Image: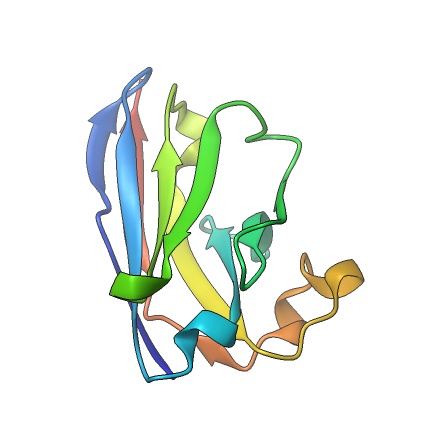
Length: 125
């Protein structure tokens, strides 16, 4: 599967953005998907995940209540709605997918074989 992340940009603190992760491949509906982010000088960190059916989601504590992950398997796309953004959210955001990730490993970037190219999110204060 190939992933294409988009939707990043420059936004003021308190604003919103919606990221998209578009996938190619007929079996995308069987893939679990997660968003990670990496700020300059920092390690890549987990943001949110969604299981293949959409029935299970998880969030990092830092984004819980502000970000929402969803998917539309008919469009082979996963979304990350980001609200109430702050400067700490500035990073390159990556989507990742894999069909074999177990639930307990969904927050581990090493569990994913397929990655998008990243989209830059910059929040100005």
